[in-house]
Image (cartoon, rainbow, N blue to C red; front, side, top):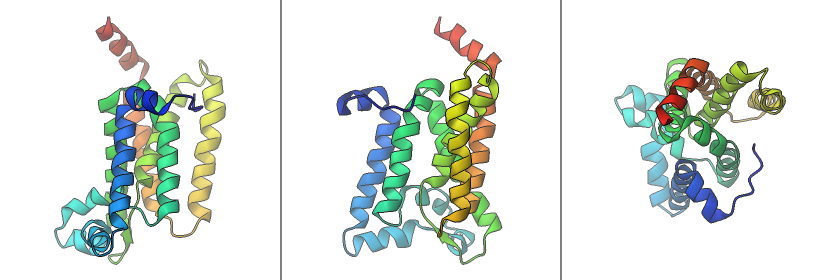
Length: 203
């Protein structure tokens, strides 16, 4: 399921939403490396609780496309590259985007509500954890029909949660809220009755 064997061209054709998201994040990171321009990107787009409170509402979204260094970017984009395609295929492009952006958005909103005013954060981790949460919902419904999926996804979710608490400079709030939002949306999208409805429409 998570073994990527497609060529570069096949991957882009089969999973356009994931490909576009990865491309946007990589391009923005490359721009952020340009002197002065890169600094302005972070000044204008980082998730600053104080500035959000001051009315800069776009910062609920923009942190999802900024990363604090190459390692941060690679970790998030590799996770998106690995887990995104199967969810895009299962849920469809629009539903996949909904899971991704709602998880990322709520990660920032909950961070704003629970963290101190001076808290500043960047990264797509909340959205990435939302994808894992959606897979968790799929496992919940298909735990008997797809036992192999459960054996793969549950350890990944557990390890991801553990890493959230043991790693430094991690937005724990965004990770956990993104995971929860992805799970809740997934419960709606992957409900057996809704799956049957999708299949009937395709016929």
